[in-house]
Length: 381
Ligand SMILES: C=C(O[C@@H]1C=C(C(=O)O)C=C[C@H]1O)C(=O)O
Image (cartoon, rainbow, N blue to C red; front, side, top):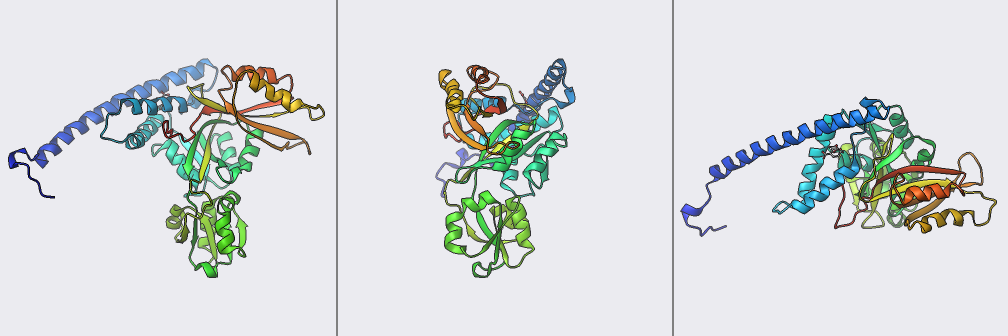
């Protein structure tokens, strides 16, 4: 590009680079000042755990509501030219390192490497923590229950295929709780080392097949479908089967050495999956929480469900989702799953839960966590 500035006004490259080096020194000093404060936060959390009679080595260092406050503040103070998305990505790593300084953190996820859950875990926890893949959703739960990892990430719900049932089934029988959530745009691909016409089998996970139903119906309606525990496991199997394909992420094509036969084969352009971050306990209330509950009612009593739901209305608590599932131990009885605004330990939801005891033989609080639904103005991580 021609530069018509007089030579004397052209900034000198080495001079600017020297200035950058000076700014970098300031940034490193400030990052370490922040890290020292994080260490103090870690100590305060250990003392708090001890005072509650818990093991201080097991203190909960990941506080999603506090992270949201940090992200919100970035949006308020940022004057540019850095876009807020860039600043948030940088801060994801700053907070990741800060968590790891407070306590060595291991994150279990539904693997193997390359699943969408792996991507969601990286998005939430950054590069500063250690990751461990587990082959099934049940195995992820068991690993966290056995304290092999500090936190765990599992798929919860897809915008097209709905709830991930194994996760809900595990939640009602496990002492683990939902401590956070994150949403990830999901692009499904058909991966294979043969041509579309020669594919005899397609491997994937049931929810991924469902997300790609229209494309598969139009392009591979007579091909056998084989269910796997994850999309990455499907890609791994397809890489060993010359007549097979997998529905999985583009990243899996690189990891497992497959070609991308078709990209973006999901029915919904904005296909999004929601993931839960599991922990031994929920996080304290934050500015904008939601909760997932499961409860039963007396099935012989007409209006029993209505009575239970009226408690939400009476306290002005908004329901965002309601579903029912067979009650594990008792055939033909059902558990109702309700997702609503608020935190179970704070009014008005705590009052709703008190009132519901009159109508519900069982109430399980599966989690309370900051609402991260992708709203452009808020844009949680
Ligand atoms: C520093 C804290 O611990 C973690 C790290 C955070 C940070 O670096 O800002 C924020 C929340 C926590 O996940 C805290 O709880 O304040």
